[in-house]
Image (cartoon, rainbow, N blue to C red; front, top):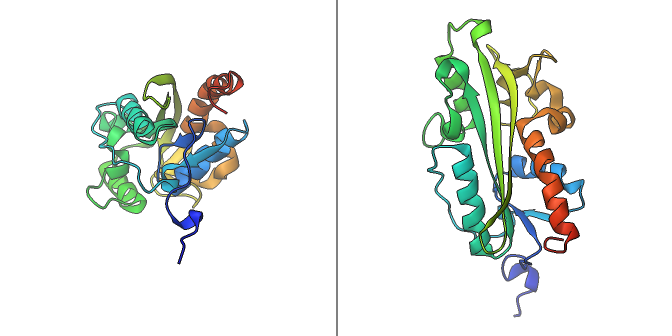
Amino acid sequence: MAVSASKAGPPPVSPTTLVLGTTNRKKGEELGRLFGAAAIKVRTLADFPATMHVEEDGRTFAENAAKKATSQARHLGCWVLGEDSGLAVDALDGRPGVYSARFSGMGATDASNNHLLLEKLAGVPEEKRGACYVCHMVLANPSGAISAESRGTCRGRILPEPRGSAGFGYDPLFELLEYHRSFGQLGPVTKAVLSHRARAARLLLPKIVALAETGELA
């Protein structure tokens, strides 16, 4: 019995397809909304079962983003947007930083990471609970060369307990001071304007549009 093309393997990869370098569904949806406004055709690594595993062993968000973008771009033969982001807490000397997703160890979840963060900040007064969300984005072409990159940040404060259920990661604990609410309370529409990822995307978007206009990426 013949196997239909849709079941035979991953969707065809065109050199002009922009692949978002993540398998995280929620992050992929957020990035898709940010770049979809420019009518750029986007997919995520979840669409390609044959993607390679990239060890995130860089010392900075920039190193990890570049490694993910260039490695996957060469492997897939298409444009890849690599992104690395996380939370830097003042009272913890910038931790968890690049270890944000695995802060609580092997098998870490959003809940376990949030619990550990609150544990480490126990007794720290409100005025010393400052934190910064950081996002670094790198765009690599099909040969693996870096074509553009950007960095976005968002300052806030770590709450003593989670508030709201929107978003992911540390969002329920990350309070935007000017709104007196967490990202978990503000929801995706506000986050799409104010977040570290949104700010990095806005800086990178004109470069992506320019590449699309020249025909290199469409």
